[in-house]
Length: 147
Image 1 (cartoon, rainbow, N blue to C red):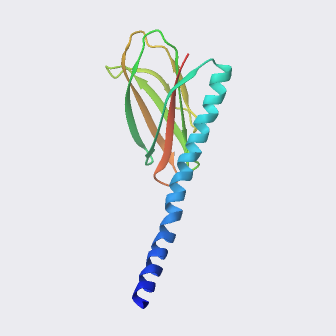
Image 2: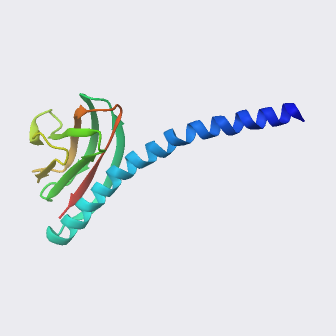
Image 3: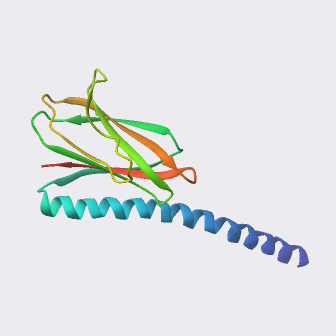
């Protein structure tokens, strides 16, 4: 019986020390989600945009993530990004299939957005750059909206 109690105490201890990490990761993602939802609320009400998709991930400082997306020529798109409270600067760049920069927001802020209307239907690259992150990894997300 003593062995069972000892094992249970160890198990409870291991679960207890791992919970803050799991809860912390969830709260970082929630920080990003809430900011993206604020963007959705604003742009759907005042800009007549509707949401196509959200993407949420993590990046270390000065790291980049690349997403290829199919956009329709002539449609008006808005892409917003957000990051957790450990991030102070995140950037968005939109490139065509040849790597040409079509739009970018490289201001020193943590709520970038770009608007663009592709001339042709096709695959375009969304580049997210985690320029500044105080505690790695930082959670980020972006939303794709269309008018």
